[in-house]
Image (cartoon, rainbow, N blue to C red):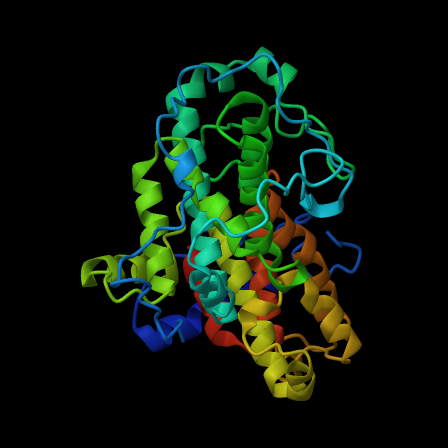
Length: 413
């Protein structure tokens, strides 16, 4: 098959410039050199909650466990010798529901809040609202971990010898030392799951095992969405307590405001509402390779969903797939295969004689080289990012979605 990525990029940029009347220079439009795997290479697989419950006299109760918030000194002994938690898992794709052989979720038999209405209201939130809230909370928790590490663990995380001895994590899919050589103090380099496994041995706190488990459960709910059991209100409560326990008052406040927002708290002031809307629902600047790739993943999920709406709406209705957020990028390969979806006929004008499996191949590759890299923060070089940008543009164009193809191009510029 012809290698037409560079020509495709020129056409995309030309359409954008014609429509916007802007001028500019492509810095990577000729990046499709030999060996980059950017062509059609078949060998490469590589509405918010309503009915606000005012509780008693409209007094807002923050879902943070009161017994854990006061009087804990996180700096007293940041690196204990004895590990409190066993770091081991045999589960695929980070399904760490426990730090031991069995889950340790037996500390209480009832929700931590005295008012059960908040729990019921949370569970009834629309899927899309809950997904954005959990994703936003995940981002804040990662920032909390990074701030704590920079403030208290820098000497350890900048010591190669200490990292070799202490940052080995058992995994069936990745080398045990995959995190030893990473820069733990860099933005977005380490994801929430890995932070919890490092903290489990290194940061003592009240009920740490239960809290670390709940943070990982929140992470899994945000990443895997409908593919995992829904995050319970009790687990959310524990996870939301995490920033306060590490002394991150800003992160604690941000999560609390976001929770009050999605729960439609009428006492939340307008400035706080506007701040939450901007941070939670507006695409954030792509300040790192991983943020850019995550944004591309979202755009491709939207592209595939819109294509499915056109091609097999009955299947979407039968599975209650009413919003694009319910279907991860990694699942679209199988869904399209099962429903016999190939590239849009309009793509034949750009890629004459194209293999009918081209779209499937690209989606299969995106499962590993976009979604899994984003979820697990696997190593991502400049060259690999450029390759995935080009493939993402192809995926959009093969589904006749020029708008998102152009958006991906503009993001990558």
